[in-house]
Image 1 (tube, rainbow, N blue to C red):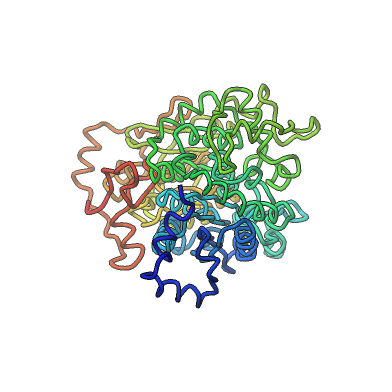
Image 2: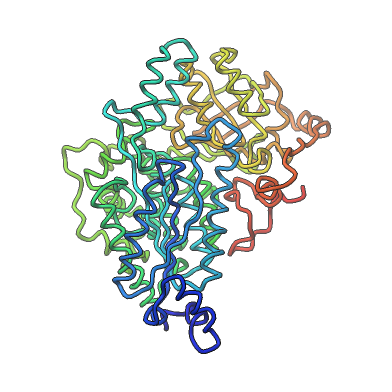
Length: 566
């Protein structure tokens, strides 16, 4: 099997002289034409701390590929920042960026005949976007995580600032104190440091087998991260030698491994959305019920923010996620036979991993966990026939019943919270923020931050067809489907409707008869999507439901359902 399956068509033989001429102009030598081409997709950009260092990491990877016998070729894709756009109209583009990243990687690699792919991502949509792109191409591939940011000297981070903003609006914080927290809390470069979506997805991808062991926990600025990049060149050449592709690594069993690790770490609800999308891209049959099934036997073991006390940098100093994976393997919760980008199995990678030191308090003992089963709960009912996703740690209780306060946008909901018109016992309903309706399915960290800042974190629930930041905690239910924009029951709710949430029984119901819901549906009129051209319009026309990953293409599994033209 040639390692030059794709590049040979581009550069071999007299007929390709013109192609070679262009490449010579880009710095290629005659010797380079005999090597496998490895595309290095960088999400580097100065638009966000998460990615501001990634172009430098990409250059290390390029040298690593070149010194390992390949020809590395750098190219860029995009990134946006949830943290910067949170609570604004710009947030609509966040999830859309996942698709743009996947499309751009597929486009460049497919066009230019690269035999292998290494992608480097920082901010949280980068990671699934990169993996989806690599899955579509199905060429020997490795993902590298850009790494975590360290917390401030005062143990604060971006999420702290969000919650302090709520405290300020309540009158419990002076503006000077807010500005102080703002100035000291984000010490770039690196992705948000808690077990928010970036670190959740980095950990999931390592457990999936698509990144080198240790990649997910490393600090952005560290010798470890430099070594991660240096090792990638040799690793991708090994994958090329053995023709190990994403389809060999990303199996149903490896996705189940990823789910187990996400749960054990107390990871973000966004992992549900992204793992479904990644599985879809590679043709693996993964669905919401798999999260419930796996969650029943998987404990939450990590005391990590947002609901815990520690940051990823602290876990990294104690060995990262590899000792946790070793424990989960020993307990029979993950499949050790799954192949990884090392060319070895999970079990082989973990063979010589030492357990955590006894004096660390970040990862709890398997038999004495933070929670006996999953914090990620999938709910169904007459409000969520396609399902909804909640992150329930137990601290906020497991059930909630209250009266609906209905808002047709996040902005209106936040305004109501900050103006103190939401009271204990209310269930804030924010709708028309789903994949199609927003469009773009924005995160609601501004909303949950405002709730906590107002001191209502234990007394108010939130339901939305949008989604949540990995920094969200409290009684929050997202991904409600069908979404309001396609006539889902969440779009039929009225103020003071009584809603029941029971995460133990997996229930999300409104106390309305089928007849009443039918009458309301007959009177319901679709919300006019304000975008008639451009990226958001295109996304709204093709995106499918959150319950299937909010994907925009048929995928390897030949998706039959999208919301196009409804």
